[in-house]
Length: 249
Image (cartoon, rainbow, N blue to C red; front, side, top):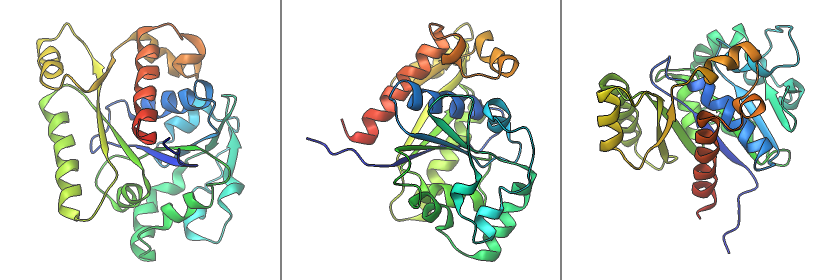
């Protein structure tokens, strides 16, 4: 029998912006909390704070997100309940804009990993919504994650960006978390998208849909207002695949 880890950290990461990263983070966190009934935390590390805006119960911006890293502040003090039952949130704010500079000054390569370790008794799954780019923050994320989910639009530029991440991990040497590329914003009417799907038939795919756009209007995950939609079902299947990989099934 395979023993499940008490905590697994899933990073939603991309070299490029605009690939649906926040959509992935929100819906995977919802699936973890609502389908798998996991004790789940969504940690928003992107200073744009889109995930925080979508599901936060606290509308006040405290400019305190960076304090977790720069000061001896208990990470639990910034945890808040989200609008999703069973899902907690560490919200992002504008203080994260200087996080890369802070990490360079601190020279503590595993600061994020150690903070996550402190939460191992409180949560079973932590979802990291990461800022784009190969930065000091992404270095921290890549060291802390157990699985890296990379949304990839079925286009040459987005696929090239995913390849750059893979090459970067190889060049760093040593072990690293497995990568799970997932096609995002798929429009099967486009020949370019169909060709990409054929070339990587084993990748999961999330369709482009108006229901996903409705998330920003309703400020809810897909499963909370359109659970039978193709997009919601695709995210549910993706989460099932993630859980299988995490537990080695």
